[in-house]
Length: 116
Image (tube, rainbow, N blue to C red; front, side, top):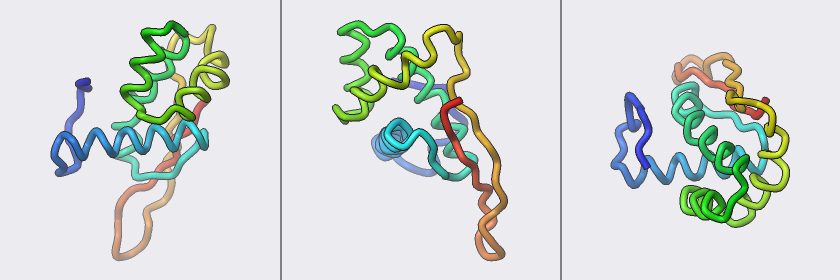
């Protein structure tokens, strides 16, 4: 699956997909995660597409979500509790809230990504 992205964080495609899969799985199970701002911005379209699959609630969309996530527990939660919340919403299922930087030696910008 291809997404419009500016960077892959200096990783090969397989490692980038593993990163997105892992972050999406954590976001679905925890409903709010803390990560860097760049990773949160890259994760947003990945997760929003998964929620759209959940709203369709067909066998094909469930299989697509399973192929993207690779975790049965996360797919069940996506289809049973998260997607029904956004049945009447046309998009924008996630929110990114910026936090302060880590510290003096590490100036990465941090952010929370959570479901609205």
